[in-house]
Amino acid sequence: MATVTALLDLRIKPESVAEAKETVESVLVATRAFPGCLGVDVLVDTEDEAHLLLIEKWESIEHDQAYRDWRATDAGASALSTIVASRSLTRFVAA
Image: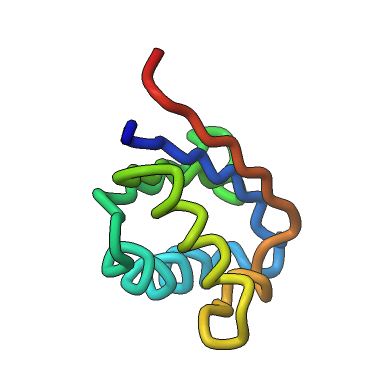
C-alpha cells in the first residue's frame, strides 16, 4: 500500500474568517485521530486569510476513503460546512 497525500483546498466565507482557525482545529482533532491518518498540516495563504490548504497524510487510499465516507455520515459531519464557501480535494501518491 502506498501512502496518500490529500490536499484539501478551502475558501472560507468572508463572515467566518475570524472563527475559521478555531473551527478547523476543532474538526482536525477527529481527523488526526482517525485510523490511518499520519498527520495534517494547515497552511494559510499569505495574501488571503480566507484561503486555507490542508495537507493530509494517510497510510493508504483505503484509509483516506474510509475517512471521507465517515465524514459524509451524520456521525462524521463537521462544522466545516458552516464556514466553507468552496472546497476541492486532490489526492496524490509518490511517483
